[in-house]
Length: 319
Image (cartoon, rainbow, N blue to C red):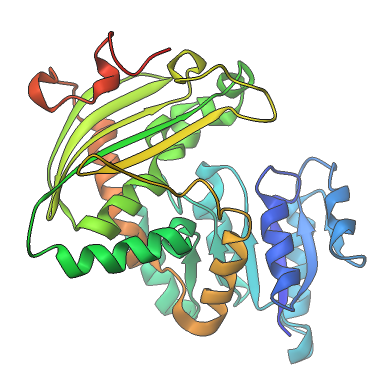
């Protein structure tokens, strides 16, 4: 059994990590969050030491590091806002714990270089959560594609619309300097997925980029991709039902819809299992999509012409 600490216990994603720690047979020893709405801890563990101030959490980690071996914190799970990931990873490494960090692992790709040096300095590992890579339907798709990639170049259309209310823009997620913007905060999993399926990008065009939506075109090693991301409810191809149906995700490969709506329930647990078995996702796995997203975030939009996503055309893709 391994000992875990967790940073960001009051956040949206934390319960998935807490459940994964329990389901993999490990112990959550301590947690921190500046917001004290952390009753979710009792759903999975009854003896978690909670610290509202991260300085006191850090002191507790250091005390455990200097204590008996069986009290050491082995892993620290990081579920905090994107702009804090780098600092919290460094905290984990300083107390000789491995870091398991939510996506995106950092906002800017050059931050990975310093983290890689710290891994070597502290002899610890940094892992990230790329849960689409363990989705059963997508794993099967990748195996199938790798059998056919040499035979043809695929045409791919990615559409991801997830409705967000006004709260989004009032939170850290709506601030570019804290979240990396829509393309990073919402899109990083899908760009990682596309690279994982079809290889590294050779060309990227940005056709639209705003606070609520973005679109563009990619030429990957084995596919041409038209992509569209949005948090604008008006872009949904159906009437939203709060709490029931507010998200539309679609990947079409050569005009064939790839169904992966189901199977999301325990993906974090699968990521934890993979990590603890020694096959977790490392900095090198995260780098290609971070570099691509940074390019998308900083490239000026150009006219879509013949490479634009259908949702950019006013007569298609809308209710």
